Length: 180
Image (cartoon, rainbow, N blue to C red; front, side, top):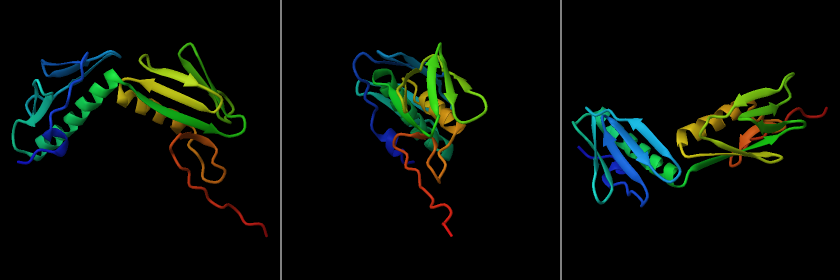
């Protein structure tokens, strides 16, 4: 059985980073923090070698091949996260739309009759300026899910482009009504 491309080469572990596999859990510890993830031990095998971390399937099945590539990607993201971290930038467009952070809670004014309050997860840092919000953290899933939850509150609409969008997102605009 051919290995997935992500699992063919060993995942390089930078200095000051420690990867440990014990009791069906892979733990990655680095300068920014520590991440852990359960591993399906009966399907894939994770070996730590001097060259890096190798993820190999234990048996020949479609599930083991898929999980081999998936866990190679997860471990790669965990190593990057505890060393460099991940960021997402959100922009807000609209008259009267604004946001502020106070005591771990983001308060958003998005044109509703009431302000929307969203608690910030413990391991994220939020930086806000007039139109932008920078979400930073070392867990890629938490950063991405929190950014998606904030964006979901007021998605950008296609006529005027108002709403919350990612900084690299392109909003396809529609023409609207024609004048008679």
